[in-house]
Image 1 (cartoon, helix red, strand yellow):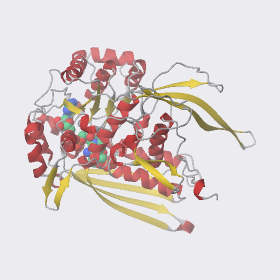
Image 2 (cartoon, rainbow, N blue to C red):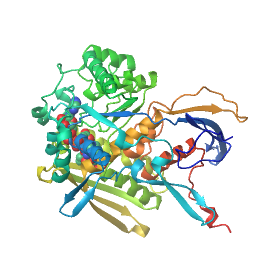
Image 3 (cartoon, rainbow, N blue to C red):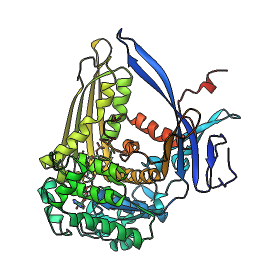
Image 4 (cartoon, protein in one colour):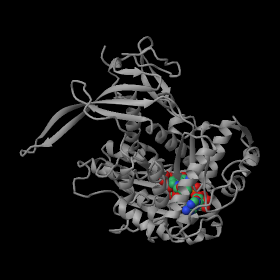
Length: 525
Ligand code: NAI
Ligand code: DG6
């Protein structure tokens, strides 16, 4: 039953006997209902409803958190840092369109709401901000730091990025000029050759070594100590790297990967070295770029250390739209037959992607994002392996800077051999879309470090010890183009499903049923 512990810091209280509020935790007992399906020899499906009881507990104490970014001096790094500082100080600034004020638009945690339930008196839905469902860190309280191979201070780097208004930058300039990225590791073979001229802040050595792992670990420890932090989350928002070759004996297992780092194998990328350092330090590490940072050995290492990892590649403009639109079309019974995705951009990301191997990493992450939706519909796509043609083009056009242009044509077959063509022109201010995702990834990853679960039998007796979620945080999928999932588990790209998974898991932690949108209360009377 409900304890007498204070719930006054929470926006709502669940009166169910399945939820218990203690000083330190919210505990819920939750029945997870699924459907087991087996195909009989006569072709008929046998369907069996299943119910599994779980206990969840979520720590209520919101910790002091540091966010360390790899690639801090880049467009995303400078923009998210400036954005947090501007919000923290409630800044306003003049633009030619009038005054603007700091906000967190584009953050699903800070800017969206979730239906809590229905008010019986008014019969209307009650919606609450997503960040009020559970105790979540406020981004204004994040302490930001990180590494960059460019030693430019953050004020100058913010100018170089050319994203924010001069009137805002002027207010942030002084404080940001004292922020200087830590030296980073630079293995030139992994990013485009055209990045070499900014690499003036690098640690000695041009291939993987344990000294680099140790240095990153000590940077994290120092940052934590210096700022009095309870936790640190690290995120890769540095340049897109080329894929690392997957080689047996090198990066296929945790032990081989550690050995490969010790012996300086050339197929270990900087991002994998960062991931390994964070895993060993038990600090969550999220990859915001498309390369295969999480080689099998890195995933095994994370599992071994119960460390959280998440990735890959922020899903900001074009792909977010794609994973909503394709979901709509295919679920509407419309046969999508081709997607042509063209984009040009003029920021440093675009410059780096001008190089073929780095482009290839991005092409892969942008191309696989409709596969699950297509595979789920064998009515429209009856042939094995049948899928829409999908082409991704990226061109570097310096003049447009961070204002990426994304042009998409969706071509579909409709009733009786007809066609539907949807053309989209999406002008995405790239770093302004990516920055709130960086924040969401940190806030949700941090929350997951405070969640524990155990299984129970039907009579309610615990059958396992409490432990954390699986190391691979697939709950972060909504923010990512190529979601990493625990080995052997399916990838979900459809945007609505990703959001439902996120909000329904949050609901389970506070003893609420998944939102079914049945609204029977408005239909049965
Ligand atoms: P950027 O090029 O402005 O910033 C990247 C920064 O990383 C640069 O300052 C560079 O000096 C630094 N860097 C490169 N290698 C490094 C290393 N080994 N260690 C530390 N720093 C290193 O790029 P931007 O626009 O900030 O994007 C960052 C990444 O995020 C790119 O990989 C991009 O593809 C990815 N991304 C960006 C999205 C967006 O909407 N802006 C969306 C999806 C992914
Ligand atoms: C060009 O596509 C450059 C890329 O880095 C993208 O800007 C970035 O991955 C965001 O892509 P999307 O498809 O999520 O808008």
